[in-house]
Amino acid sequence: MAQLKRCKRLSHNWHKKLLTLQNFFQSQENARKDWHHKLTHQLVKDYDIIYIPNYKLKEIDKDPKTKSKKDHKLNRQLYNLGWHRIVTFLKYKADWYKKEIVMLDIDISDPDFLDNKKADPVSMLRLGESQ
Image 1: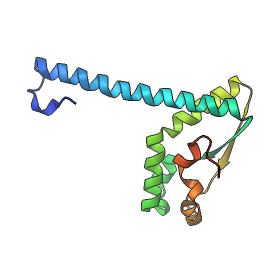
Image 2 (image 1 turned 90 degrees about the vertical axis):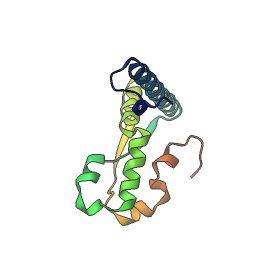
Image 3 (image 1 turned 45 degrees about the vertical axis):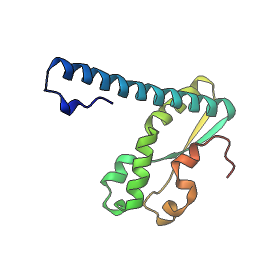
């Protein structure tokens, strides 16, 4: 990957490397968005009712009670997965295919919730995994 800091700022080579970096990050974003579309399409196609935990990510950050490392790790995993985009895609695809979405309110401040292996968002999204 091009190293932008080695070039003189605003030089011709700096602009070329900046363009290379932008293209790289854009391709990563496109791949992630494509995966979200494929995943949500598969879920909506396979299931008539989809249950989604309603994680309130902003409330996790603001609530002083939930400032543990486990909460931070869960929050980071959800952001890395693009949880909001997945939920948005699921909602509009479920409306399109006339399927039902049920949002589950989950108390993240409950200590038993974070110790539960089902709270791992990555394992919840794996298709075909029996629990």
